[in-house]
Image (cartoon, rainbow, N blue to C red; front, side):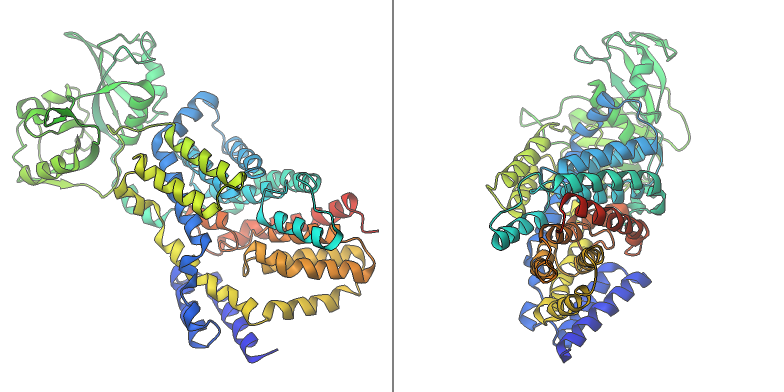
Length: 590
């Protein structure tokens, strides 16, 4: 072992130890490892920042923006309420998410399948009152398992097919991977369904401040118009759209004030006073196609379409105190609509325009960014939090799905590389305003990208120093004395162990020829050994850095580095126990 190889192994071992120790944030640890590797000469100075241009960084960042666009569109809520209105159990929700992700991953890029379903997971999490961490890691693992089922499901399968072509003259076909891959996917999903509780409940640290100031008792005024599907329906149907987070305080029909009894039939022109969080009210408005209070806002005679909503609190110095929205005529004088009011624990039963405002009231205001900024200054209002309020904002439900479908279709047909396709999809979300420009950099998880960019040159030092070939040589000596079952297990386990430090395609390129050499030396057919390499390279369940699917859920799930092996280690052991006999049955070695 050379001096450079010893240093490369030492840096990576120290880094993994600090990751597991979990006292410092993962991006800080990765950056320290990079600086240490450069200082020791393990990573050349000119390659120190090569990770920032790596495709994986672009893919993960773009997928986060695309996922945010899909979540913001409201299409997720529509799909859940239409197809799975009564799916309330955590296990049932998790089964649906994992099966869909696994099936999609067999035919499209697994990170794309995961990006589609992540917003659904957040909706289920909110409805069930369960941390998103319980959903996201099992989904990421299901995406990896689904990729094992076909030739195009994951990069290792494609590379292994090419290696078999070079060795035997015959490539693996599209569904040669299916018998073993499908078995592993079914067994793995069943395992995850029963042992998802191994994943601890985590909270995304970046959103904890927003959660702390969440207002749950906004009062808003909605009008039933002729386009609403709720016409003639009981008010209980309207409240179902809020998933139990919205209550009706009054129904105004002309000059008559009516009690909001559950079986009261809604008519066109009814005014309904609702109380709930801004997000719950938004679901009622969007799915019920109801009209919020306020007037169509115009600028220079043209109807404004690029409107935003924000929360603000009335300060003691505000000129709004003692006045009502009707008296202020905000829509005409300021180009701003008042959409909702929250007054501590008090329940408001007046129409929104008639409520006399007091200091401490929290308002949801709608308007252009310029008009809102001016109103805040003129009326001494204090923005409540730097977060997006969807209530009263317009969204194009199907455009994000069309953009994502186009990106995944172009990668499946080989028309564009994954990084280019997903980068274009993220740009499409911005161009078509499905993700506002101001929110793009909120969606991109900076610490995750920094960690990836720093880790890429550090992990690549194993290859550049010859450390991976050294491990391969040791492996070859050990495998020659083992029976087929043992040799196949050794190849599979080693591929799993190497994948977190090389990308999965590189793992196949390193381990594939070694596996084929084992088979030749032992007088066996190489197919089972090549398949074992592909399965091992595609089954990284132990770290958040070995595959972009694991990385994608790291930030949103609030996971720690040490959370992955809690669920991933027993799953890896199960995959090994099932894979080896399945491979020997489907691909006999003699």
